[in-house]
Length: 124
Image (cartoon, rainbow, N blue to C red):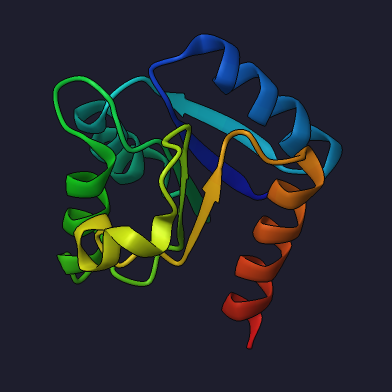
């Protein structure tokens, strides 16, 4: 079963995403901030990271940039998943070169579709 790291400081969001992942046959592991996220990546080697932008200690943008700049994790897919109302396209390069961007206010199927698209890219 593929592991997905869900990084969010909101426990409710962690549970929502975890239920969606479970229905997809994926296992969720969690981090509550950016520092913990980087530790979890090194410890558990997930196949995907779903990453909130606004978190304590280190924001999602910085986590994504560090993952993409590290030779060992640069290919790890990252989905930025934020409640931020502005469109992600306006973030440009500041979002750390994530593989996909999605609003938390989307329909759950949009998250499922995005995860499937990211995994398809990996396979090809």
